[in-house]
Image 1: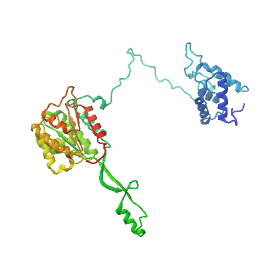
Image 2: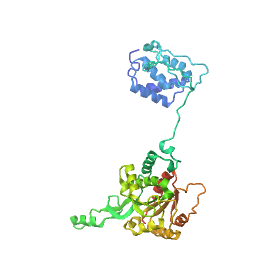
Image 3: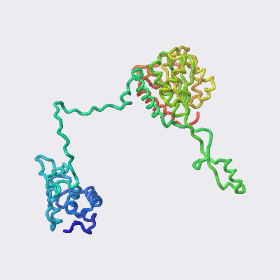
Image 4: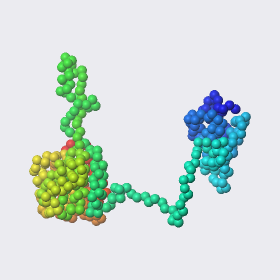
Length: 399
């Protein structure tokens, strides 16, 4: 036998023929094993018989009981070759037949063929220290956001509240867009742009050789958020400000805080630093933690020059519904808002409490004009509310 056991033999043909010989001898070799053998021969062409032996054994043998049959077939194929200096351990008693072939033990003459020729054992650095304690498994803990899912806002510290703000920004990313009445030139448009087409026809004796097409321009749907910062909303106010900042930094949004008066916070919450944005917004609200006049503030918003921002917008009101104004005035203000807005969502921190019912006069008066009443009393409630706002707003159309 020469130094190259396969010589000029086609490796793929040899692998198929050798696997067929093993199957007739009782060793199960499928297409996967044959493919592994062919790849092994292609990556490392055998230059010695021992290299070919190990490539075939590792690729084609899966059970310990098949080793003797494999050795007999291999020896019969290469009958004129010298014996292989291979060492292997006997199968331990009670071993199952379907267990993968173990790696032979490393011996002193491993360089002469014992063990895997490319495997080296790491040297022992030190003996393992004895311990009288029982085996301990690592404790699996939830992620930072998942661990705060059911925690109320009053139990969150500043770092956890900032984490809520980052999670809300991720939840409202990719805010839906709406179709506007404006059109822009686009090769994929279905509508013919008359003016550009006529302008190009001047070059070709007024024959419209080149037809220009256009399609509607899509813009993110505007969001208007109103946050109640009265005394009854003290524990939720900071978390709701983080929700407002998430919308301001991601999409076209106008945000307002109200207690007894209305305060615009859009510019303050656009600050790149979340802590600075919340601090500026808190300093801008002069009537924080006072009384609540929802109807008065809604009328002020509708009558101001920001009232046009409500047209076709998604309006989100975060409040518990406690209002010192008469319920009739709130119903009238909500009716005007309903005719102008695209959708109205009401976030109530007490809506998730078991047995909740909108029995408060202000909440009961405003509820018929709301598209959805969403609970927003915990970390997870606010994330779910942001996700629902995102999914519902995908509805197409103009308002």
